[in-house]
Image 1 (spheres, rainbow, N blue to C red):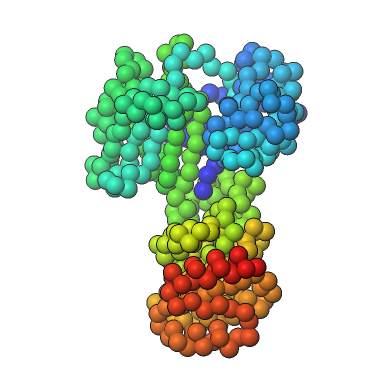
Image 2: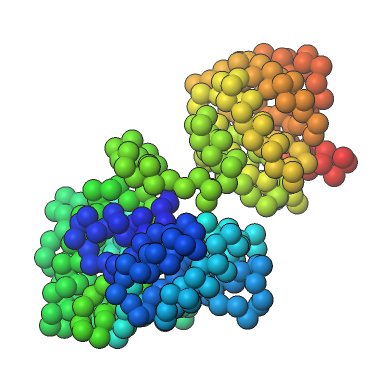
Length: 398
């Protein structure tokens, strides 16, 4: 789960992190009122979407030479003008894809006289089983280019969960940022605060870009992105309340109601599989045979009729889907129960695209018999390779 920048900053502020003053706004009028609460005379009007690259982004509805999704304003009239252009329009960035995302809220912050920009993030390093700090002296909008062109300017500091954050971690981070004197001490304190926030909130990723040093030598978090471990959200009802479903794919929201793992892709063959690894293999073999998957969908170990029906409906909600491949290994769930669920679901949704089913596991013969006697145009497959060939052929034939 992701949150907006202003929400992430509000969470970090509870851990003592230095954040420039700012207020969320959902209308032009609210944007102006927010600016009035700030010292001025420099304001920053920031589009709030769940994607990076906002500063370099472009609005679909505005001329090509229009400014991006993060703009400076030197008076209240400019705040109003920027807010009017941003709200309700679609911002396209390197992370949104061509579709872009509609801007429904803004963040009006106090301007900062920046002396230097840095980069600092935390994530879970699965290779070491530790929380890793990723730091660089080259923060800002071009951090991707830094990672590509000058990776030596990026340093990693990992924290052993057995010992937790220690003073030497803070010193290593401040040293990697090449800070001295008071700013060095500020960086050490900030690293500890961010680590505490990361663990306490069960974050999956916490990115500060840029972390800035102002002309007075104060370190400030100018922008932040936060995502959270969905499996731990039950411990954080306050974080769950921050969820903005308008930023999420409607199909993914619907899938979450049935405990289905669904991610939309750009292909034309819908996939329904039990098990994440098997789902990945299914998508790979579809591509191997010359087609492209339309989704990742893992129904999990308990593929009930209700879940299978919901999965079919979600897959078919994508107009790009021209065929469906069901690949189920009946381990905990028996193949005959799964087959009955597939037949019931196909009848309920009035399936109108080719359907290829590959079953394997407990009671597989009984499951195939149920499919063959269903009266539906279901194509049975003997193995995964056979299933991929058949669904690709069926789609081409249709």
